[in-house]
Amino acid sequence: FIFWGPPGTGKTTIARLLADTVDMAFEPISAVFDGVAELRKVFFRAEQRRQQGRRTLLFVDEVHRFNKAQQDGLLPRVEDGTVTLIGATTENPSFTLNGALLSRGQVPVLGRLGHKALEAILMRLEAHVGHDLPIDSDARTALLGIADGDGRYLLNIASLLVELPASRQI
Image (cartoon, rainbow, N blue to C red; front, top):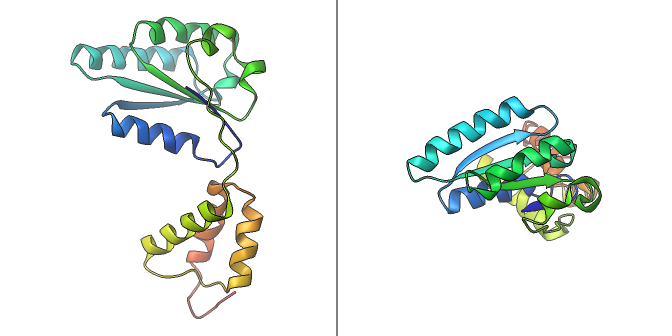
């Protein structure tokens, strides 16, 4: 899979959940920071796991940042089953990934999170910390609007609000 969508829409979370659901080892790398050397290490660990009967999900964040040679380097390990690849990109994969890589998977498109999904994130955060955010309904609505469909951004801002005393409501 190549998950394509804007930031904060759950691409990494979905990949982690998939790996957990099917009991695969989760190996995350970043195409921005990691290169061929790190891929070789992942492939080595994945091959060791495979010999023990366990599969590996290789998650490549910002996969569009890999150059053609790096993308080509993924193909043999995907084809032989050493790893199951899930890439994440904010760029149109038709223009940024090579055809050989694209032809071996599917490209689900993730959209910005809606109001209900963002509200659910806030409710889970409040349940986790054990109290409501110290904001009134207008501020809550504004917070959801500012997030603009980005769950990560919403959590980052809300985590700052969690630290405010409950007596100081915004």
